[in-house]
Image 1 (cartoon, one colour):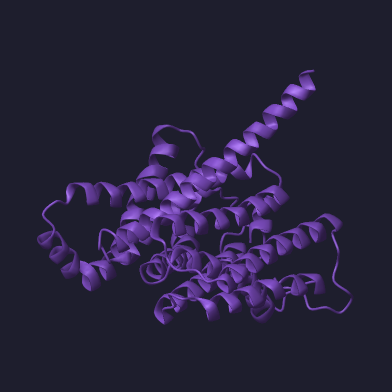
Image 2: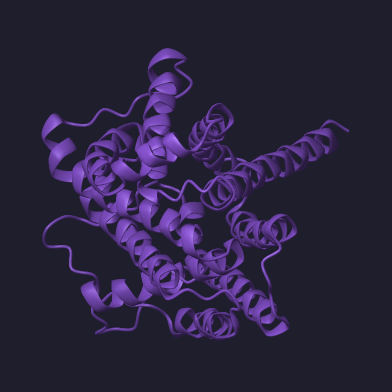
Length: 342
């Protein structure tokens, strides 16, 4: 009886973790799109900077004030030698995501972001000649095919937004690859990652945001008589962006690797559906089919990676392995769930 109750509680806890993760993720995406489209606040650099400030304050409160998470200590030298380069890529990743939202629909942007597994595999293979089982390469075919079909049939296609989303995938993959080498020896969780990277990201982005968008932001304030509610929405999106990081930590520790992968792809489907219900951007049948193929491909890719990691398959003799002369490459977090997310 007690075992059944524990099992039921475990299932309920996992479902609760997934639902709150979905809620934060979808809400942040929709709010950002609402800011750019409905509030006419077309300044992605400024919005990203607000997010970084809110995340830095939130991480400080969680770790230093509320002490809900222990602080992972980092040498002062490593903060500039390792954390700063990671923060730079992290900053580019977030900015490109917001820029793409500025120009293309949420459905298209989310589908392109699903291209990240393919870019990660290709970059690791090209840069470090890392071995990947043929089943990994095969699992990428539906992802690439789905992205191509979605891009060709997108009715609201914008080249600048498309390129921003595509380079955002490259930035995400680069961040993943760099994390393995630059953060060697530090087993960061999502909150500690934000604690160290958000202040650097704010420093990096503050000057470009001021130079490129400062005059536009001032003009926006001058032309809008009621600014209290828009500002509440903008800063609320920053607070929810930080809460999203905390929810990721919770869902990782409440689900299995396979569940995490499937839930992540279903989350994209939920975001696409909710955004269509709110913004009513036109979606053709072939476009929806391309999106579905991409998501199924991502799920299959995650399943293949998980099964290969469980079987601990080794590359055949003579296969080049990842160079490890500089530093031993280790995962950012010692948990195969994050590896499946990649």
